[in-house]
Length: 504
Ligand SMILES: NC(=O)c1ccc[n+]([C@@H]2O[C@H](COP(=O)([O-])OP(=O)(O)OC[C@H]3O[C@@H](n4cnc5c(N)ncnc54)[C@H](O)[C@@H]3O)[C@@H](O)[C@H]2O)c1
Image 1 (cartoon, rainbow, N blue to C red):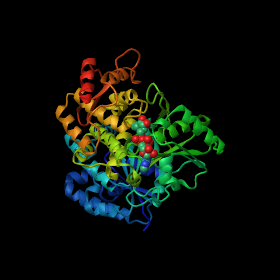
Image 2: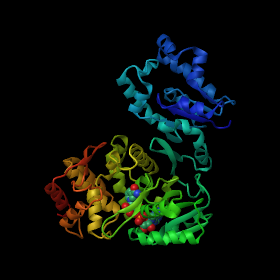
Image 3: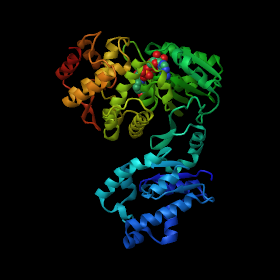
């Protein structure tokens, strides 16, 4: 049997909209149910939920086995049945992901949906079902993209050539689905190629090229910078632009940024500016890049005066995060990435934080959960107007440490580890600070500031680029895991004490 595209998701996610956009080969099991048994609400009221679920399962299994259908949208509760979940294994499952408040707003009063009548039950159901949808899904598509599904089929079809277990998450930017992110293992070895125009021109660094130079052997051109933060400068951007031009890259081609955050930021910036902008496929190979920097479109270079001071927003055309590449990552780099994992888990709270505090480090599922957290934050605020600033948790002090030490003493992630400890102290969460210090320490991350004075760090904070005009530098503080607050004012004395504590 040819696999079908199966749409799952909560009430209000837009499954019917997506099915309708796909055309006559698609069916909606709620509609099939109504055709066979009459209105759902009436059936529910007359026979109860158990009888409804049994009848629904029969309808769903019938639709999944119907050779005349190419796509099937399932009723919101259908995945609750083990029989349905088993049957889904043979199909390409798309989770149309809708937030709780978004679902409420889309349903309005929800009078005709039996389970939407009671707001508390509605919220509990949403929380209960979301993990179920994610368990069965191959693809996560933000609800905003429901009507775009036909144009996304090419990116979904890429999964046909991907190793089993590969997950595809679509990123939403400014209310639209903007690009696919593939997360899994063995993606480079399988030669995965996302939809991207023209020829590929690889930007990488020497160390990554040694390990993964063969991964894009079909590329039309290649430029490798020296590994490390020192390559994230405008002088290196000029080298990359020049090499791309010499290799004959045109506006119809795309850049592949193959490497860690340095290559991603530099390659993304060069793509944003080369001939006024060409697409970039981000292929992150470090933990920092796979959980954080590859998504969201921030690109740029450092100045001697401060990090990331020159850049552009340039969303990727696609992201390929292959967790297998983390196997060759030096231990210290993996540890540095772990600091970003902890940061992301603190911002997300919930299951991700529980997973990380329980000992998860860099498995593909953790990478996926971190990527989804970052994508959700960016979807809400692409250009750092407010909500996106939560991602800066720990970073104000981290960037200041990097600046004060001339970018040489600490890896970015190591500075983030110190910055997180300062942020948690400033948040007044002493127990959480102790727990996080233990997690970070267990991965070999530094708990002590060395190589510069606390004053130099405090001075560098004052020059942070998040500062607007003469206003004090806004901090991100945490009320609890999952509850980060942006734009917080920190007393200079408290900041000095938190930084001095790091140096003690
Ligand atoms: N754009 C964003 O949103 C964002 C977010 C976070 C961090 N960043 C930036 O990311 C940068 C840090 O990124 P990073 O920590 O990935 O550093 P990096 O890119 O310098 O990589 C670290 C080292 O690991 C090597 N390496 C990379 N992949 C490897 C692999 N698979 N096997 C073996 N070696 C490998 C590299 O050659 C390098 O020496 C900083 O410049 C930071 O500002 C950007």
